[in-house]
Length: 441
Image (cartoon, rainbow, N blue to C red; front, side, top):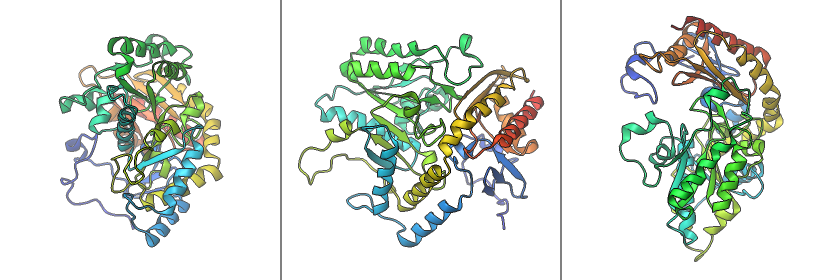
């Protein structure tokens, strides 16, 4: 029996949502299975967003549910401060084996926001350990999204996430330029072939501040919340080379790109670049139980392993770090990815999604289409009097008229279907988008 609509919607303050408008006609989801959500009436809605970039193996996977239930019956909680439980070590080992060579240490948190915050704290603490505490600057990128902690929005580059909160974290004022030129890159398929030179802006910041003041650079291998922008070919390699030249740590925010979205365990593999820290979340548990983390290179990790053996090396963590239920969910999820070859499937389906979404070129209000891996961005011409309105209208129309759940960022529709999606699912999603576009004004 599905839960009925609550009588009073006033208590819950929804995140990233126009609450007053939403509560006049709420879009409720009460069940999910495979590629679909269900609303209170039992209507099936195809999930074109993998929940929120996280349900990579599809909804309602019994193996994951059973693993969570078993864990809850055996060990409902174990503290991660001064104690541990076996599955957290097993999970850390599994994730380290999936990461690039030389990245063998995993610090668990509960979300992508906490993962980014953790990576930034580790970067600053690393240089203090190395006797270079003057390296405090953290360089983000325009349109970057690294969660919603104060540190995350400080290095992030999305104005609406930053402007309401006053002065941000010291040492985070500088941002690299966004590696995208609309004059030459509109309707690009996969990685733009030009644009590696955008990375050279880091040299300018080195000249301005001195490399000896810069702790780390943090970037997304593709910008998801900004609207699905792939890194230009060789951009990340060039950024890695500049960081190496000046002794700067490089952090990849792989909260979205980790666990198959780009056809690999991590985007670092797709691009042949090994960062110093990788953040992850979302797909690690298929969205079932909150979990995130930071994968840290041996060099960074080992810098902390000095001093008396009884001393705490890193004064950081959370009550629910490495929670037993999250570990059980993650281990079952990784088994599904492996056993069903979902990363390989994503690679195979990439050209199918690419062809389908680019067929929308010329549809009403479409000014750009971009794709990479199992993700695509369809950018709409904004209403000059109300930027973001068309994107919000697209969400409402998709739900009400096309039986579909989508994600938007501003006026860009972002598609990221579960990795189980087949050709018919992709066709269904894109034709539904076409129907939405025909109804916009």
